[in-house]
Length: 89
Image (cartoon, rainbow, N blue to C red; front, side, top):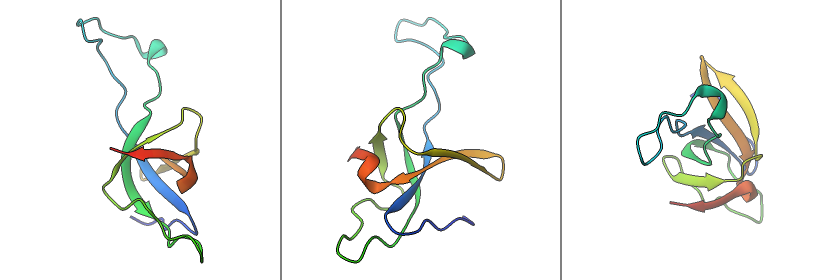
């Protein structure tokens, strides 16, 4: 990974969007919702008084509008503050 997050930021690879419902109905591309979970790819060192809780390879939940979308080497990622992460799965 060429990007090293600073301070309390984490780099997350979002999980792929669902392509089918539980009953087998195929969801068209324009109706797919953004995934709200993903895998932590990189973490910053944390703040002076607040060590980081999440680690690389943790699966996490985050808010629908959390973070900033970036593209690195053709792959989509989200970079956000650790406080935007709701929990670890």
